[in-house]
Length: 149
Image 1 (spheres, one colour):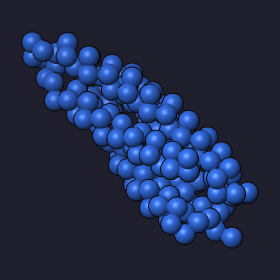
Image 2 (image 1 turned 180 degrees about the vertical axis):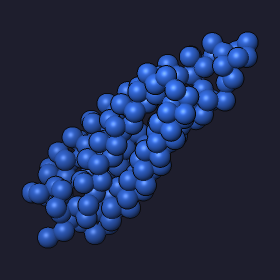
Image 3 (image 1 turned 90 degrees about the horizontal axis):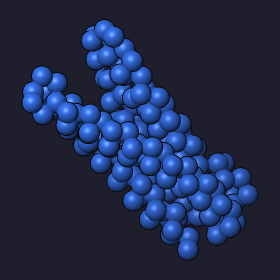
Image 4 (image 1 turned 180 degrees about the horizontal axis):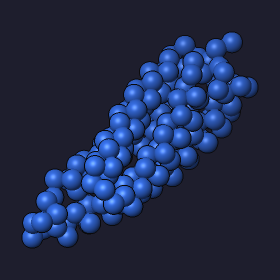
């Protein structure tokens, strides 16, 4: 049962790559082409996958805290997990921020501003990946070495 959280979160992390792929597909569609309506379909799917990922990350964070307390006998989850708990909380915060930024892109009128915000949106995605790597390494460390004493 102690491996439920890691397996679940690896599944959830795969959503990040699906979200990124669909976002790239949306950007690849030329707004002036006959297939311009596909862009809206891709963007709607991108948003839906993002909301699902945030919901799953939230469940994973709560489940990780409960699992660490229940199965690893950790009393202070964020302090005894080599930064793993902090990584999960930061990751969830970045995901919420990325959803906010993604929704804000459409509201901008100037193309230059929209492009800058789109670049920032991608930067947040890469920050999410970095935080995910930190979470993965620290999570493996907790499973191998056990919690900090």
